[in-house]
Amino acid sequence: MPASSASRPQSSTAARISAAASTLSSDNQHVIAEIRKALSMMRSIAVDLEKQEQSDKVKELEAAVLELLDTYDDCTRFSEAIQTIEDEIAKSKAVSPSVPQNNPFYRQFKEAIWNVHHAGQPMPGEELEDIIMTSTQNNLLNIACPLTGKPLTELQDPVRCVDCKHIYEKDPIMHYIRTKKPHPQCPVAGCPRILQLGRVVCDALLPIEIDEMRSVKSVADATAVEDFTEVDDD
Image (cartoon, rainbow, N blue to C red):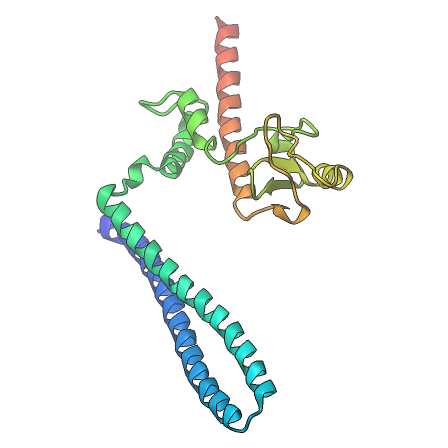
């Protein structure tokens, strides 16, 4: 019984994602169909105008056709992209089936429960260093703002560059970009990216990833305190 209830949210979520993709694809196909109807109508109108020798009107209509065809191409590519994504997901799942138990978020879930009664102690079979190295390292490229030196966990208003993924305190980096024009290079040593105001933002995942880093840091600090206490007692 518990297993089936646990599987329901996963199935429901997957179903919603699949339904959303299908809705997008269906809506896009509807737009494509309407564009083709419009093109057919515009062709007929153009023929009538040409018969009436209204060449200026025909040219205006031709320009409108070209603009509509640009939208048609975008819609077609969008449909192809949706199909490609669905195919790639199916292919990836077939080649490498997902194992939720190996997901770092599952480990964080288990770790939170473990820490209720074993705060500061690594879970069985895991070293604390392994947890720290794998928890947020893949998402956060730098651990401190390169301009202020503040750790990411202490930033008041963190932002991330869309291009190079480095993270900064908002006010200092915005001032840096404005004063280093026309080519404000990312202040992280060795990064060649040129920063743009509109591409240094607080994306939806950044606060979550920094909170995860804080959680990992609190575990490490608790362990350090416990180790120090044990040494002191000895």
